[in-house]
Length: 148
Image (cartoon, rainbow, N blue to C red; front, side, top):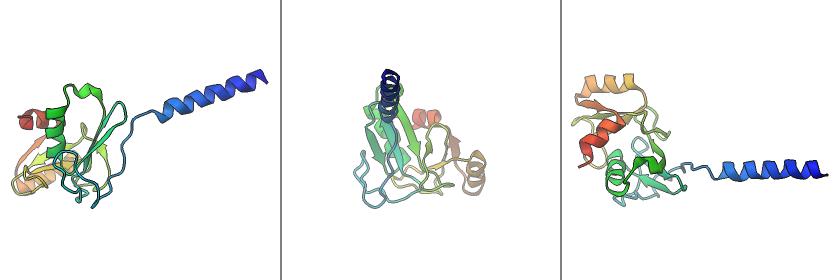
């Protein structure tokens, strides 16, 4: 009987700890508002999220809103649990914003007019760069370029 109680307590603690892990939430396109500019999030190629270590989720309609939010509101990015972005090559599917490639091309508009277009596949970003011109950035490079 005592052994069963210990096993139950162990699994209960595992369940509690695993349920506290910060995670993103699906964007309700056409309904959710951007936490930076307050526009409705509609385009599945551009939606983004920031998740704090406490589990608070902030949703954005474009990479530029997420970059501006992080630059203005976050002192240390290490305080964040997750940064997600949708991409041109996989609309509506989140990837880690740190692993994305960002093509900035005047020939490819984005929702907030900074021409930032996220891609999950580097080869696809390069192909679109060849077709549309522009420059490709990593997340850190993009933050440095547009932080001010």
